[in-house]
Length: 47
Image 1: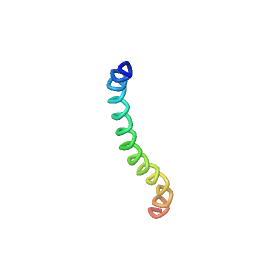
Image 2 (image 1 turned 60 degrees about the vertical axis):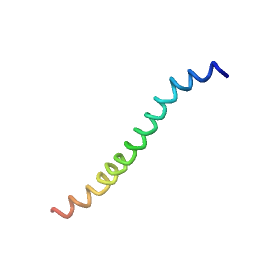
Image 3 (image 1 turned 90 degrees about the vertical axis):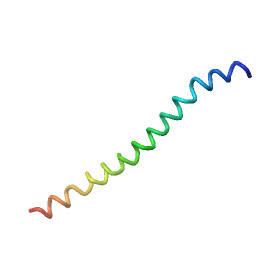
């Protein structure tokens, strides 16, 4: 068990940071996808 504690402390932090960043990027990607889906409708409104 003592062997796993250093591994968890070394690997755990990068995993937490990665998951946090993926969560933040996911919400921004959802907004980009929504904007792209609305683009044809907005272009029709301009013409």
